[in-house]
Amino acid sequence: MDSETSTDIRANLERVQAVIAAACRRAGRSPDGVLLIAVSKTMPAERVKAAVEAGAAALGENRVQEAKDKIEALGHPVPWHLIGHLQTNKAKDAVQLFDCIQSVDRLDLAKEINRRAEAAGRTVDALVEVNLGEEAQKGGARPDEVKALLDAIAGLGRVRVRGLMAIPPASADPEATRPHFRRLRELRDLAGLEHLSMGMSADYAVAVEEGATIVRVGTAIFGPRAPRAGP
Ligand SMILES: *Cc1c(COP(=O)(O)O)cnc(C)c1O
Image (cartoon, rainbow, N blue to C red; front, side, top):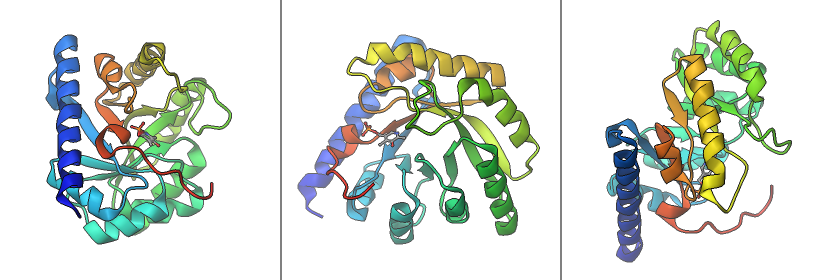
C-alpha cells in the first residue's frame, strides 16, 4: 500500500489515542483502562494491517463473512471483536474467528454460541448488547430484559459475559448521547460486570468520560467508508 495512506492511519490513531488520554484525565481515569478497537469494516486487509503496524490494540468487524477473509489473510496479531448483529446460523464461524462477540442479544444465540464453543473446545468472551433507545431496526436486548438474559447465560458454561455494549440512538450532538452512556453504565454496575463498550467516532470522548472501558472507532482512524452495495 502507498505510504501516504499508512501515515494517515498512524496519525489518526495517535490523535484518537490522545483524545482518549485527555478524556481519561478529565475523568480521573487511567488510559490503560480503555481498549481502543479500530473498526475496520469495509476496509481492505492492507489498511487493516497498516493500523496494526501503527499500534491498533484490537480490531472490530460487523460482518462475519467479510471478517473471515481478513482474518484468514492477517491472522490474529491483535484480538478481533465482532460488533455487528449475529445470525444464529453464523455462530459457528463467529466462534472460530473472533476473540470476543460483542453482539449477544438473545438467549437462542447465546445457546448456539455455547454449543459451537463446546464443540470447538473453547470458551468465548462475549458482551451483551443493549438496545438503549429501544429502536425497532436495531439489535440488542431491551434494557428491562438484560437481567434475565444475563442470568440465563450464566448457566451456559462456554460463554463468558464480560460486560455490556450499546449503539445509542444517533445524534449530531455527543452531549445528547451522554444520558444513554450513563444508563448503560448503571445497567453494567447493577449486573456487576467489568466492561462497558460504548462510544464511536462522533462521541467516544464523552463515552470515556462516562466510564467506557472499550470504545469502537472506525471513521476517525480509517477515514470515511465507501457506501456498501447490498443490505
Ligand atoms: C461502524 C461501527 C462503529 C464505528 O463507527 P464510526 O462512526 O466509524 O467510528 C462502532 N460500532 C459499531 C457497532 C459499528 O457498526
